[in-house]
Length: 344
Image: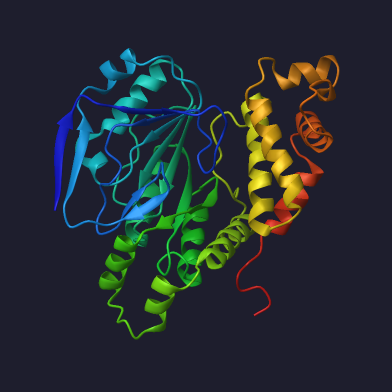
């Protein structure tokens, strides 16, 4: 049972550095976090849970609450996933405000939700493929394309539903066919209530191997392997393998920090040069918090004059500023993209 209750409260969260998977500086959440069934995903905390009864709060006056808030910093994430968006359209209301204020936005919807009606060129629509209902997802993809939106797909990694390779391959084909710009994984921490709900919905008995894996195995290696598999599928189908924030082509401090953070996260997941990965992550924070634009510093002198930056980060960001790419980052990305069925 899901009960909806209107409230004046609007959740606004701010970040000083970009964090995966959405890379946003400000988050607007017009609904309470747990609102899906039988498994509810909190896309801000990246957790999954389940309950027999859910009470979902809905912000009543989006524009008024946003006007009361302090200045929104770009990019802005509007968390409008699940069926509540079909009913109330509060995410769309928030997007109207952001468009009026010329904010760049990431607009998150999901399988049972609805794509926004009022997106502009500075909005990136992210369709989260949960639940994994391919017919419904294809309808959303087609709607996003028909509205000429900038959009892509994210897949919450939840065993055993979104770790099945055939389903992921089919989803990648659908995304590519309809023109998705990216196809990316989201790592989700699944709590025991969600695991029990999954076992019931899939009809798993406690004597089955899948049941034992779900409740008793360390699934982190499988989760990371599936993330890497999705990255490989994205490359094979000509899509980016991470959520592309709006205005990512701009050579801003925020985007430079995204490049470093994404690279560091992948190195850590692969347990590759862990010390260097930690250094890159630290440099990402320094760059995100700099008062002066890195592009101006590099043009006037060199990023090496920023004493807190390490040599590797200086080389990566300098090359990225000059060409839009980094040979080191490209090498890490090639290593990251590894199909789970490689060699079989």
